[in-house]
Image (cartoon, rainbow, N blue to C red):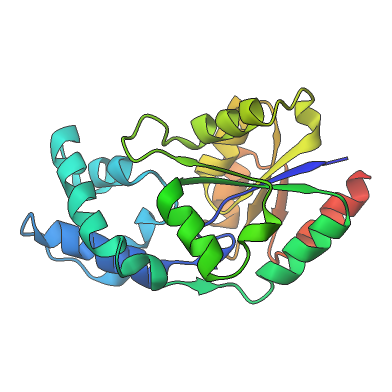
Length: 216
């Protein structure tokens, strides 16, 4: 049985499009780069510094500066420009009834992640929050997953299912020898899920309940 369900935040539990893209746009403007929100959705999910490097060819030093500019807006306004998906709480509640231990596993810093969970009144469903650190020492999804496994003293990785909406979730799961479930309603795609070898692909968060039931 999948006793532990590790859940990504952005694009899996909530839709953070406006808050993240507005904050990225503000940071880019500091470097005299103009962008529109739609083209910045690629920033949702991956570590922020990596995205500035990958998508705008920033040096590591400039990417760190851009991250600091980003947080000037995100920390006070952007994190609340966010919407919870309509069936998120329903599914979390059902997973708890099935006996699952729910763990947040996100590349977003802990400070912001917990604020968001509490803002949407779903914090209490989680037994543990594994998040990125503000200083970038733990920001890759594989590192976050390992941190959760070590912190919870999990000895059987076959009991863990990682659920997320981008390839980073699948890659991070493979790095830790656990299975992954890719949700397509977020910011990835079915093609991406297949390319990286997700064990499960679902279009609706409700379908996660069946996966858990079938594993019992």
